[in-house]
Amino acid sequence: MQEEVNEKTISLCVQCSRMTASVLKAVMRKSLNDLDRKKQKHDQVKQAEKNGQANEKGRRKEQLRQEKKTPKGKQTMQNLMAKGAQLTNILITDDNIKSFDRIARKYGIDYSLKRDNSVTPPKYLVFFRAKDVDVMTAAFREYTGVIMNKAKKPSVRKKLQQTIQRLAKHRERIKTRQKDRGQER
Image (tube, rainbow, N blue to C red; front, top):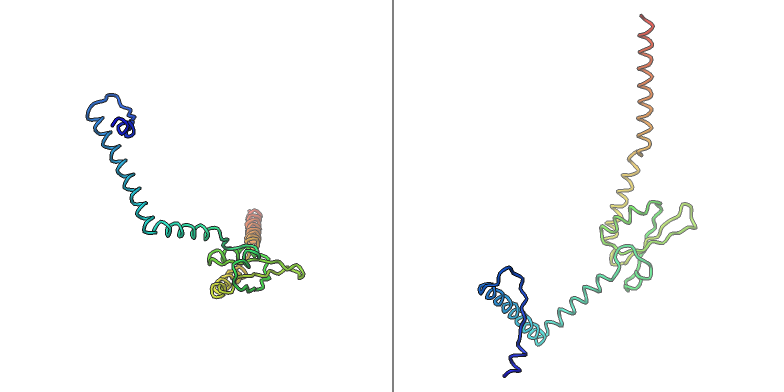
């Protein structure tokens, strides 16, 4: 009898300014509720193991971890080939490859870039998985649209030079007016 009582001893630590019976009662209720919750959770885990649900949850978590580990977007050729899909490539001649990188990330394309220095200016080969062809064509449409819009827009430097020239002409007109007015007096 004495051994059972010793094994089931619980220690409670409470900070309060005044220990009353109601405070002790509230603390004991809270601790008993916590113990009941732990026991219920333990029973649920045991039941889940019997049903095999815990193993399924573990498998799902492992699959999510593996998906997070696989690289996305720009990657090396080895990583791209390791996925086992057929690779296709497209040639890009533009020096500003960063704009393509942004669009490819937007569409979630796995690709690899190889630079061909044999030609001046250097060309880029974009390798991507063959099953992404539809997504890749949509991304290239948007990429070419961005490039065309950049070609249509005049550069900021050209706009700045034009405004400087206009201001210089305007200043000359003002100076000539002031000179003309000064001579008439």
